[in-house]
Length: 407
Ligand code: NIG
Ligand code: FE
View 1 (cartoon, rainbow, N blue to C red):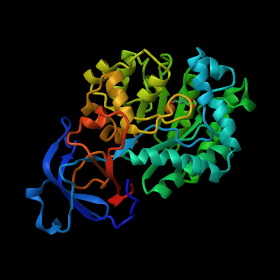
View 2: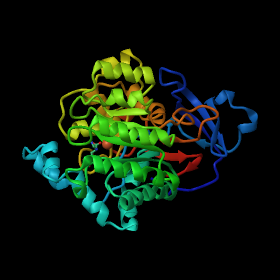
View 3: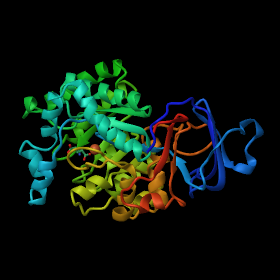
View 4: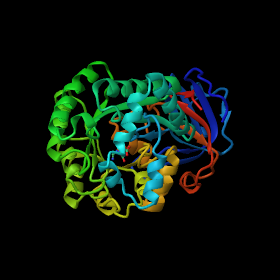
């Protein structure tokens, strides 16, 4: 990839195969297309022959390459310190994720490393991962807290998340995930810990560090009632909610997040038909995380048929985290969504663009259309299905966020 150039947010590309995703179905392909943007906003996306004269001028010739909307990774834990490769080895020897967590490993082991890291060190480690995601097309990145589990360290994580966006010139959306795991100092006192989480939230929000609120509602996480308390605190501040729901068991998490009009229910492997119906009613997006499914060698598929039948939008994200999904490419997550969940490449691409944006409450991106942000990627591919077809490799030729080339 060439060195990034943070140039002015104006430009024109011609000779591209535009994958506009405009409309509710289909790739929205435009052969010999032109894409023009001003001040970081798309002004024209369509056939070159229809480019308005006032937008014509010096153009980059894409030589038939595909251009898609910038990818939106709507679920990551990309800010953390250390790694958990040792647990990966343990699991290959037969230990399972829940056992490791109950024995004081898992999330809490990353908490130890994250607490010990300085803000600068945490930023340096996190930037490395964010750069990899960016190099493979991500222009909007959601990052959760949840490895600090005390006020100062949750704050540190959220500050680092904001800095990642500033440093790379992409948009980062932050999600407060204080209710991720019970820290050792609250052992046996989950209610007391939720009191603390509910106390920290308005303070973090007052610093502009919180765009949304999440929780891990699970046997090894928090109960439905505890999750409800976190959601009520979010609602009191007007903050949208999302949820790690029904990943390892059906805890009725999807129905709860839908009850709160939540942006998304994530993982959702064990979500019941009633949960899907509640999501459809509320307009809650199903965020599929095939990386975690793959790494944990899960077998329970999300209720894909029901999602489709009830028109629940499906997003795809990396879940980039040190435990269950050390995945540094959203395109690879799209590939896994196709192979494991049988999404079509078109569904996977929509999942990593327009539906990912929706899972973050963002309506100004996710397609190539006049008026939307000029977030797009030029790929060295001839047809969009290739984005899900190649395993690994580097396909992005140029990544643009807000009209500026960032990779
Ligand atoms: O999305 N399920 C909880 N959270 C993460 C895993 C975090 C970890 O193991 O560090 C997930 O899979
Ligand atoms: Fe997650």
